[in-house]
Amino acid sequence: MSVLLFVPLALPLPCTHSASSPSPLRAAFPCCLGRPFSEHPADPCSGAGTPAAAPVTPAPWGKQQHPLCFVHLWPGTSMSLPASSTPELEGWLLPDSQTELPAPYGPWMDIARELPQLIASHQLRSRVRQMPQLSSQHLRGREELHLAHLVLSFITMGYVWQEGEEGTVQVLPRNLAVPYWEVSQALGLPPILSHADFVLANWRRKDPNGPLEIENLDTIITLPGGESLQGFILVTLLVEKAAVPGIKAISRALGAILQCDEETLHRALEELAGAIKAMREALRQMHDHVDPEVFYSEIRIFLSGWKDNPAMPHGLIYEGVSPEPLAYSGGSAAQSSVLHAFDELLGICHRQDSAAFLHRMRDYMPPPHRAFVEEVRGAVSLKQHVLSSGDARLRAAFNRCVSALTDFRSYHISIVTKYISTAAAKARARRAQPSASAGPAVGKPPSALEAKGTGGSHIFSFLKSIRDTTREGMISA
Image (cartoon, rainbow, N blue to C red; front, side):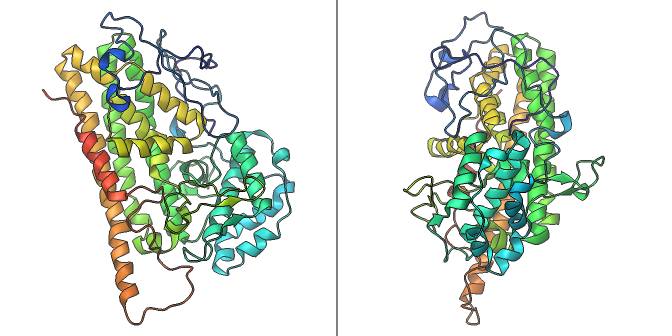
């Protein structure tokens, strides 16, 4: 998405850094890229000099190779975000999401509105093959592009998985693949359903003046899964909303370090810990709005990708785009920028295999979100500052943030256990029953990803690993 939270600290500045003149904030945390502490951006309160620069890695998708730099913390003291930023409440959610495309794109919208019915009746693939070949050139503005990407992403997932994991396709037809690729290139997003589409852009208020609460929210596009799918999307949306004060606290914390303002830094850390606790409370609503059997048997397959997925080991050919199959990971909570930003601020260093997966998931973020996370990654080290300060109150506040993040990840594991592990065991038991039907594959619980997440990770070893390394980020007394 091109929008971020509103932080009224400074006007936006265009990114003036380039590969030949990189930002001095781009040095990474040492344990993540093997650099010693001495190569961090220097703590301005320590009197050390300006750190050595590191090159910027360009975005892998599309034309947006040089987004705005949203964090300008060296040598200044402010975090800058785009002038078109959203109200404070909405954070990284795409605000006032558009719900209709221009008239020429009626064929896309007509199919998108009927996706659950077309999939259930096995008619989606034939309807897609009958679509006219449309160009993306009539889309105007980022709002229309985001809605087009959302629509085409949902149609693509329905097309690929209409017949379940036993009836996948090898080719995405040209009349869908080409415009999907064009829109993806324009937005700097991959041509597959990601967290940015599924959650951040897929919501609207029922009452435009009403609160951002689940009773007043609806999805724009849907897939099979009914109320459980809607609940899954909207509860995840509310977790993102709960994170907003924490994202704002990042700017306050890093600015306070540069200003040697320990009182503001302490308040920022308390705000961050509170936001993470609020995220956990928001996630608890999953139990009220999502049925585990429906999630596992009906919803999950439509979030699956064609990378690291035994059901589609060779990927997918995008006709008219590439003669060779392309492989993309499915939607994953790891594609949310929120926890990446918190990890980078707190200096959480995950083990090599987990870190590699997380960094790959950043390729699925909107370029401005990815740029924000990278700027936080390259900023002066909060953990080093707290350690060098010798301030017991700061250390305690820092540890409360790490503890809250550990607790959130532990709670997420319990959610995944209920909705995937336990649900998978029940599905296996049903399949083993002599009366189990050998009917059509569509609607059957998927088996190819029983031990993996839809993003392709080995789900429980991955989740436990990042929870444990988060806990290890505590500062001992």
